[in-house]
Length: 243
Image (cartoon, rainbow, N blue to C red; front, top):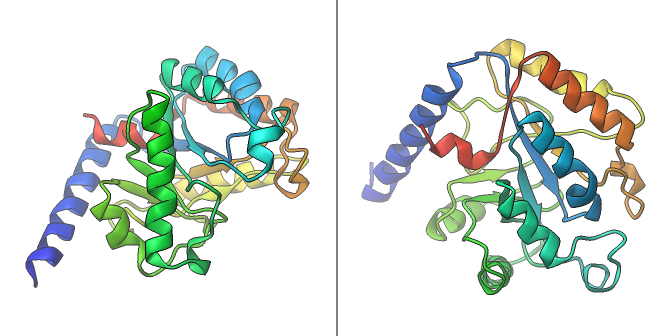
C-alpha cells in the first residue's frame, strides 16, 4: 500500500475509534442531526427548540444566487448564522452556490468550497470540519479533495444508516426527512436496528421555495420531542471528534 493509502486508513481508523468510544454510551440511540441550505427558520424556529432539548446539530450553509442575497424570508442572514455558532451549533460547508459536485470540475469545486470558507472567515466563523454534498450525490474526485482541504467528514444522501466501521468518512450516507407525516423519520430511525447510525437531513421547516423537501413545524417539533422522550443522543458531526 502506498504512503497516501496508509494515511487514509490511519485517518479512517482514528475517526471510527473516536466515534465508537463516544457512541457506545447509548448503542442504537444515537443520531446525527443536520440541516441544509441556510433556511431562515433554522435560526428562528429549529435552533431554539434544539437548545431547549439539549440537542446538537450541524448546519450546512450555502448562498443560493440570487435568492440568498435578496430573500431573507427564506434564507438566514449572516448575523443569524453567527448566532447559531454562538449557541454551540456546528456551521459547515455546502459550497458557495449549492453546486452539484457531479456536474463541476475539481478545480471549480475547490473554488466553491474556499469561497464559502473565506466568507466564514470574514464573519468570524471557524473553518469547517464537515462538508455536505449539494443535492446528495458525491463525485469520484471529492474524497481526496476534501481530505486535502482539511475536512474530516462529508455527507451524502443515500437512505440508509451510516456504518462507521465500513463507510468512507467522506461518503457518509444520510436520510432526507421531509413530508407531511413522520414516515421518513421513522424509517431513518429503524435503520439503527442493524447497528448503524441514522444521519438525518432536514431542509426548510417549512420550505416555501422547495416544497418537495418541506417539513411542517409541528411535525418537526413532534419528531424532536420523540427523540428526547426516547433518550436519543442527538449529535453534530464535530461531536464525533471529541472523546
